[in-house]
Length: 112
Image (cartoon, rainbow, N blue to C red; front, side, top):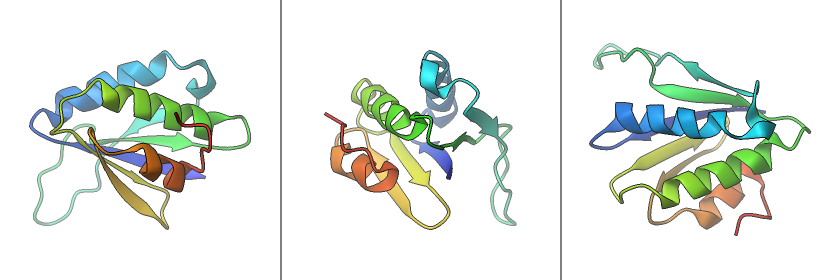
């Protein structure tokens, strides 16, 4: 499953860079996540890197991503919004309200 992660908020570019750095410390996610360019529409300017993609297979990367995102969001200000999409489902997560939504999108029954 290919998952796309977008971050929005007052400091979206800085937050995306912080999340990317956070993911680099997750052993199960090494080689499974990568930065990607935003798909530029007619009415929106393009940023150099606007999202992170993750390829989630049977290696345990899905639960690892869920836990990493949960932990990272708990360290952020409440104005950070993360959108997680697998192409069929899309969920928006706010720093203050995320546990059940992560379980829904990533199928992680172990998120605390």
